[in-house]
Length: 323
Image 1 (cartoon, rainbow, N blue to C red):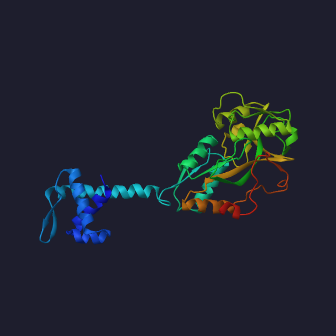
Image 2 (cartoon, helix red, strand yellow):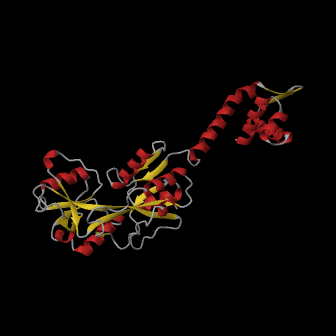
Image 3 (spheres, rainbow, N blue to C red):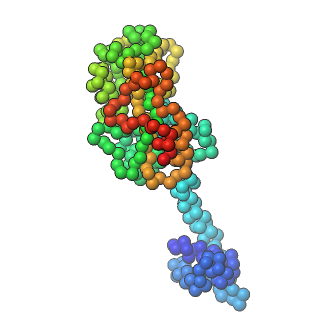
């Protein structure tokens, strides 16, 4: 059904004259007549009766009018649902307990007026496809592993370097250390069943292992972080890596230790990805907010960090985020 014809019918019904409806719609009176006639042919009924005073609705016209108004309201709601700024900002944070989720919580606290829709997409190919299609507005990722450049139109900027920590149970040989040099971890079993081949974090840990001679085991099913913590707490020979900002809760009896890694501190490079043609106004607000968030670690070891060579450089200034 032609919505322009439905809109013309409703205007003529309100005005009671085709001439006034034409003036309201900024079209000719002849165009009004043609649209009404076409609508009547589609419906198979007469909608108006011409009188000396103008045009009056027939019984069929009166029956159709409330439905015509609902059609026009539905069309406006449909258009508004995709109009920039009239739908939630959709952002991929990968998982609920990791650093990007914390960044988005901070953004929500700073901008409670912006409606958010937070999603969790596992792999970068799925996230990039969603950015290109407009399914999401932004994604947090580590970019770009060798041989996997971002496609044209996808922009990125590094927003957070998150230090890794060693997580051990109370009986682990390093449990009492206040910090541990990265080289000292050679020979220790680091268990990370959540590493999935082909993901950006798999590429990150592959480079970490190759450069520092570590032993990272990804064997066994991944039953989630709770099961991982249970196993590490009960197994003196196992440890695991966790991001400094990863939110963890464990039973008091586990006695787990989070130990800073130094000399150098391995940091995970989180970047924000978005499509250059995305018009959502809240996307600019998100980039501006992240520009005020410290992107790199602070403290005595802040200058002595490690990231893989393929990681895009950290932003030199806040303007890199908002440009």
